[in-house]
Image (cartoon, rainbow, N blue to C red; front, side):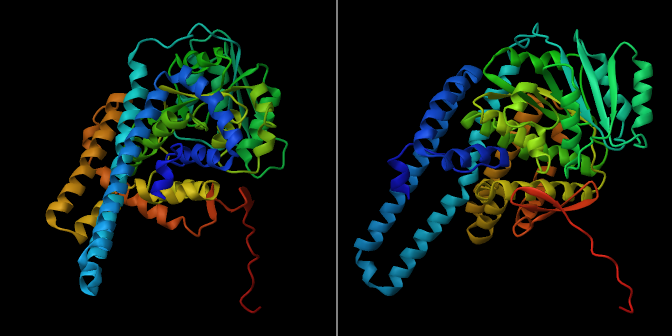
Length: 488
């Protein structure tokens, strides 16, 4: 295996975040000829977009090649010593040599997360360094925009979220909300919004008119059809934005090679222990994988907090109608746009979301749902997460080896995790007081590892108080059996 890797074009192993795994697995599944042609096309656009992605690939390739060669050389040395040494003919010594080789291999594999952490630091530094260069480019590109927001129920601080879209420094845009019916709890808030901002173009649509499993996507189908403009900005109902939001996220579309835009998000204000833990998980776990994926292979997904594209690009893959019965619609939209040959731009710009997890149970269920969906969409990539989670490997080393060896691994793990969280959270996303949350990193990593284990063999999720089965990438509602009387 190592010889094969050393003599062929380099391919990176699966990464921590499911988004990072998507592009790697898709590339491996395509025929080599199509893959070579796609790579030549995408590299031109990606290098033009990021300016540093080619360097990142070269650096990542160099790091992995060095470590693979190091591992290959040492294993060959151990095998040669084992086979050629006189001790090989002694059964007792032979067992000791094999045990030593296995132990060395275990220690090397246990250090695999450190390679990933180095890539996270490098990718994060390049990504957020762009935001320090000054004002965003193409801020004067302001085509008419339709902002689409599917709504179901009443989110916390809903009026503050909705009203932030009415204060945009943008010349021509409309707001379209779609709710299930007139009895939805958000309707009075939306009506108040229309009264408070009569100068804004605001419309409320009732019902999707479609019999789809994914109600959110069904609403988007109708909103896209009724939108007046070509450029579409789509985001969830719990998102709050600054007045420069539309100018910032629409600007990249001036480049004809860009087919979609998305961005990161941070919490408005964490008040409970669970909310602090969720924020730490996003900063230290979720975003690192996204940034590594961006540097190595470009963005092949979108985040539901911001999706900017055009009606034409949606039509290119059949529109939202094509995915209205599938989970993870935001991931699919970004991927399907990228498959058309367009770039999906991830901006060093963050919107805000109101925390929606009030208990550990809520957070656990939300994370389990997401990871279960990712396991079904990217099964091999999901398995690859085992080699990017530092906590279980370091604890295994500490429990099975000397105190010095355990201290070295655990110390390296803690140092990397704190540095990653600071670089992304404090330096990149400008989160104040993040150092107070640093002790939660270990708890998050332990929770994330437990949830990862629980996803194996699991095919059901719970979303909006409804249970679904995932079958061949499709959502299938679980039909509750009728309750029988005890006498039957």
